[in-house]
Amino acid sequence: MNNPRSGLARRGFLLARRRFFLATATATAAALALTAGCAADTGKTANAKNAAGAGTPKRGGTLRAAFAGGGANETLDPHAANLFVDAARAKALYDKLADFGADLAPVPRLAERWEPNEALDTWKITLRKAAFHDGRPVTAEDVLYSYRRIADPKGTFRAKASLEPIDLAASRALDATTVEFKLKRPYAEFPNVLAAFGAYIIPEDTTSFDKPVGSGPFTYRSFTPGKSLVVKRNDAYWEGAPHLDQVEFVVASEESARTSALLGGQVQYAHELSPATARTYEGKGKIEVIRLPGSSMQGFVMKTDRPPFDDKRVRQAFFLIADRKELVDGALSGAGEVGNDLFGKGYQYYASGLPQRTQDLDRARALLKEAGAENLKVSLDTAPAATGFIEAAGIFKEQAAKAGVTVEVKVGNKDTYWKDILDNGTFASYRSGSMPIESHISQRLLTGSTTNATKWQQKDFDDLYQQAQSTRDEKQRAALYERMQRRLYDEGGFLIWGFADWIVATAPAVRGVDAKAPANTLDWARFDKIWLA
Image 1: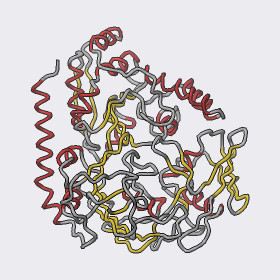
Image 2: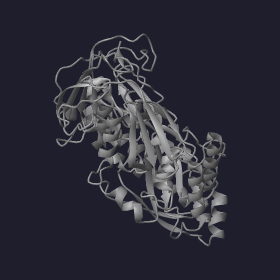
Image 3: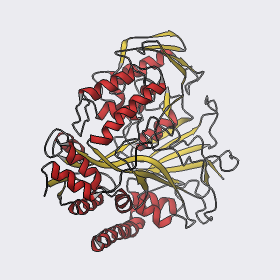
Image 4: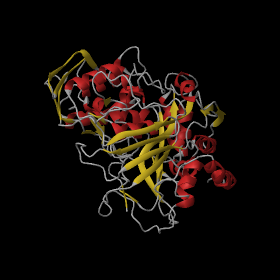
């Protein structure tokens, strides 16, 4: 039975936090210093539908969108994108060869199609007819220049790791619209590379981004780092001109400031709101709350190379200790869905046929006894590095106590948290944004993976991954991914208890926001598809 006092304490904490946000909202918004724009009528009723395809699109108007920013050192170099605001601005000005759909399968963009050779180590990319903002056509040489710039050993661009499988010295332009990529090894999921975060195509020989030229749906108008970017409609965009005349990206780093600016009509789109804020305003008619499902995996990592988690029975016991619904309800205010100890729920290749794991304290105690780990004591590292981390740690501590496990919660520095937990400790809070399941495996679960926080290092598992990448047939490849996931489900080091919604909100007059696109996928922040009713 749950402890009612602890449940009340958690609810009291969430209510207090919500009151704090509301109390500070007005003061923070006053510091936002927004100029007059195309304000929406926030008094409209909530029956206005804010979803892709709702109504007939209207042309014209300016939309102002508030994001958390990166300060005075912000740049419009798309290869240097790290923050959500960077990605949204880059998407407005530039294109990639591909991007990820809602199921995290790659979707062609500047690449009209891709074709591998029989060995899966050479890929031919055919470009669609598209032009940069200055009228120059997008060519194969632009693609090679962009990728070589990203991969430059002297650079620190985020997409560099994603491009690692490409032998760029051996890759070449077959003609103006065809690129031949030579790979270092067979790679069946190579289109994921084309869709990698930050892998935007820029004109050959570009060195300055003061007045950026891309091939995206909007063209540059003005930029003040840390404050605002204004872009205007590109009538010659290859996929069709945007509905809006103009978009202004406004920086408002505090969530309370973004919320207040939206409520006050100073902006019409606010990115990244908390579950508590969403619950406060949802259905009240002032704003439209949009939940983007499956955007963030939530869980804990158990290091499989050290006691007590080097014994798979202890890991299996911890899987059974977790009450996933209580964690989602308490740590995420219900803004999400339960997980099943596997990454990528709803994504391409996800092993959806495995039984949903539920709490079983009797079996957990039995496994701990078999492992000689009765009366186990463990430290759980956490930090305010992501929404719900502190709350989830407290909830799991109470759940573990019912199985005879003592969990000591240690709150660390949020600024160094991810570096601290990569190699140190044994048990820690964890979160991941959306990415293909293949990318999750290659980055986090192979012996040589650079962000292998669970220290899962199994040669036979590595071999399965390599076999999958050498397999042309997609059904056979899917079967190999399922085998890998079954192994992780049985004895892996990720205790994945939930998947959080990513929350944005708009003025009631805004239409065309895709409510099914996880953050950082193709249809997230698609301002070229939005219009004002």
